[in-house]
Length: 579
Image 1 (cartoon, rainbow, N blue to C red):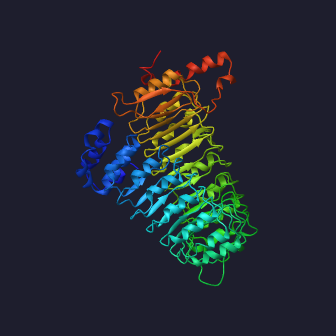
Image 2 (cartoon, rainbow, N blue to C red; image 1 turned 120 degrees about the vertical axis):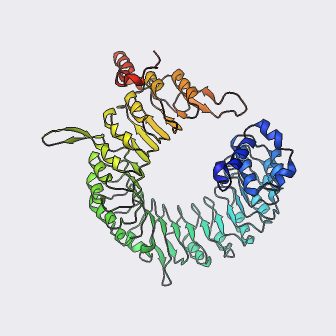
């Protein structure tokens, strides 16, 4: 997390002080011996300082000692150096409430001995620490205050899972990817405070699923990738994930129906979804994901007037079923139709019926430029994904003055639009002119060998652009050298732009150190705050295969491409270009 986010309630001066204290190794040495001062530091400020040091690779085990009376939350997820020595110091943190060491692959059973008996620890996350087994779980049993445990994808067996029954304060338990059997789950019946239970990939059967009724406060349940086909009525459940299951019935019973608000059935199979959901109060649903599932009839959508998030990607839905979405579109905010049979006509059915829609995804569909005019009639849109579609950016106008006009002009009415994905479409330079009118656009993705230096010049006028992806474009060294990015730009993805040379890329990076540049020839190295050089760059070959696109062209065509796009850039934009 950013320092500003963790101390947003404090003054800007406090933020600057924390930044300065974690700026360099020399800065750390200047304050690390002021133990009494650190012991009086508020917990949230001490935490911000600790994580600031971690981000800058200035945190090491012995330095942890100065934080042992102040820090309450430590997040070390993914840190490859964290091992038993780190936990030895963390085990002495008197007021530590939360310890996250997920994906720290050096954590072992012996390392966990250091946290035995911690008096205030309420949460520990050991997800994907593969060296943790049943013996490691035994070390946790003395921490009676634990309320949240994540041991997903560790080496814990069904026997180790049964040990957890002594931690009766548990409310969150993530056992994803572990061999949880019916018998192991039965041993956990004493955990009556459980509210969150993740059992994806377990060995649970329908008989074991019946045991779930003994958890009266259970509100979240993940049974994805299990053999469970029938689920009893769990009247407190609000979120259910049964992705990649074969579903016969959910919540069958005569007691009060569960107030389910989120239902995830991605990749699931069912004979008749309407019958499977017969006992579900679908009017409560606000989130439904049936992507990649065997769903062929969509009439059940008509009963889901409260939906805000709907994912139908990779299903068989066609234009004739889009009417059902339009009928419940009043509250819809996110709609995913990626890889479906929906066309521009189907998008037209939605126009005027989804006033709150903020996110529409149509990647991999047969939609074309006709859809853009309808999309322009969805006033709340913030994100549009038209990648891998038939969009060209131009539409043929008939009438007294026939000709081609830019279809993207319709997007200029979307004053909230922040993200636009046009990768792998047929857009060309001349179709991008309307994008300069998207004043709030922060993310733009393009991937096309129809684009040249002119595109880079046109997009440089976007005032709030943070992330620009211009992949597989025919960009030249001169075009990149002439590019004058706005101060807001933080990431420039030029992968696949094969005419660019390493020297030009390095020069651009040195000229704009605040921009992360992605290209097969470059690897940006994190700046060393102690050095006088604000950033350090290394030229490295990438492990990913870089297909040399020059193989498609003759020598004469290559020479023409090398210099043709320079002619398209206005003279004032290339005045300082390299020869």
